[in-house]
Image 1 (cartoon, rainbow, N blue to C red):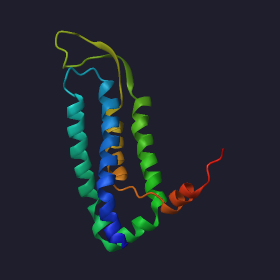
Image 2: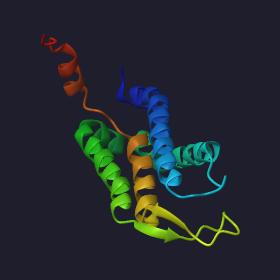
Image 3: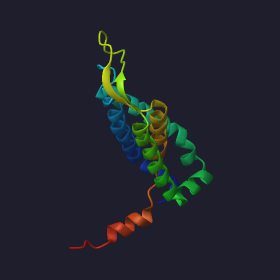
Length: 154
């Protein structure tokens, strides 16, 4: 099978994985913030879908330009490391966020709530990095084949 055909066949799976990762990340980010209906699960799903489409568009040159496609397919470990790094950035937003009394405009009549809010610039950066890297991650085939052929230790 040609490399060009393979990258297009993998696209639907990569988009589903990207959308699922963003949905879970979005639920974690917005569940920590006391928002009254502003970010429901359906809103997070829509935002994740739009971000996944944007990540696809940003990464189209990897699929369309033969030189970039060749480098991308020959160095799959780089994409795995990039996905890991983007997850680290997204999780880091939780460790450098703020805890304490927070004012949320969505709850009118209440002055403040005790809540933990992630560092939003870092969280958004992690969100977009996770979108682009997971939408175009190319897993090392040799390692997958190696792992699949290993006998199960009993």
